[in-house]
Image (cartoon, rainbow, N blue to C red; front, side, top):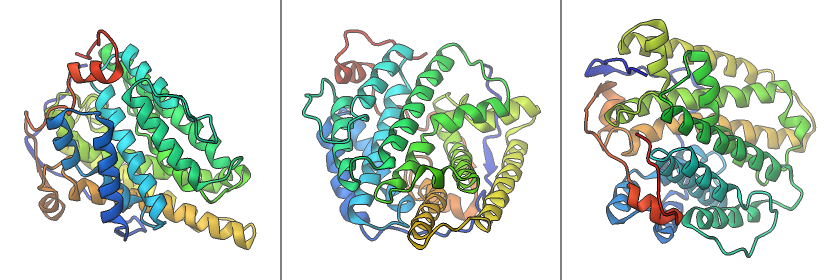
Length: 362
């Protein structure tokens, strides 16, 4: 795919100007961040430089901004761990082909079918990471709760989408339209298992979660997470020459417009999704007092997640390298061709997965 040329400096819109949730930071931020960051260090997934650069992104801050509507200590810690799992998967699979990406995803999936801790010795760091995360998750729900199947299903779907993205990347790109891209992005974003974590400890029944209004609210929260993340990640992906998997690229290609016009299209689309989400908030049905309370916790959770994703994009260092607060105030972004490399290299990937050879994506 021939990537569009972009203006070096541009203004980003406020995609959440009408979003009905405001910034909240968890009261457990400091402790959860420290514990989860130490956990990442203990895994040994990066070398010394990669670990330093990765931790500087403050992935745990993302969890303490997004899961903050349910400010329970153990839940916030689990959210931090899950965000680290996602970002580590992203870093590993961004440079690997389908075969190695499949090995990574198989390591992650190995423990998800169990509803009690497993004593299997992990074979590589990805298995170790998955096992330790899942052991912690098991403590927040009871065996038989619907949350286990829901999370395992959405996580497996996400990992399959990551494999398909790796193949898409290696084949030079076969997605042609905005609509096709959004279908793929809803999978590769990891938003579905991310929001599924809110089910832990609530034990919401399937018929509640699958009610048309609840399903639509979840779908639109997933959509907004994709849109917000793609807008903020575009400069970083552009610097890595990997902006082919970003909605802004597909808007430019399909609509035959420049980046600034594409941002305007994205803004209008995000506002339409927001309007639908707000409308559905008024249509949430009532079951019984206990269920209604749980449903409100779930809905407030997914709504806050969208807001927190935008907040972290400015407050963390992953996308704007410490200049995010200024970007939030001015909306001004400058593209740079050598902004940031990867946190892991071919040798580190090979050693972590215990394979003799690694095919790295071109």
